Length: 121
Image (cartoon, rainbow, N blue to C red; front, side, top):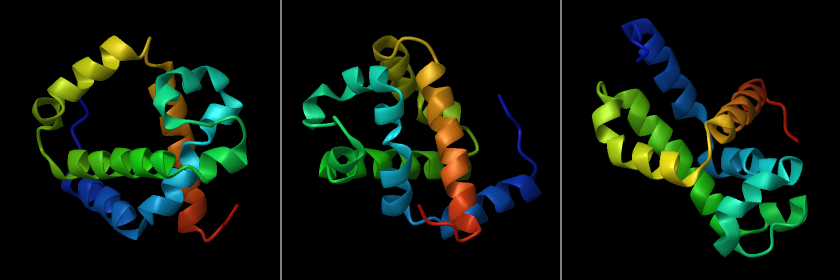
């Protein structure tokens, strides 16, 4: 498990405090258009066949915002492994492998960095 220093924790909290969750959510989840195999996890979300459908889908926005709030709680919680044990099991059983999470984290890093420097898609 990663052990963050107080400075790192404060820096991460500062980044999260500047994020517009709904905006970031709409920019990270269209990964399903680039990586269509991720769509199988969101079958109940309806039409996800192109970027316009994805960004216009309120379920996508809601799920992306939920993810970001979950990450925010993990940053603030000193023992996230206990807090997210059940969620971790659910995702490890329903999502084959960690590639989806690596892809999501890469997209999140790019989107948040772009937002912090004022770049808009």
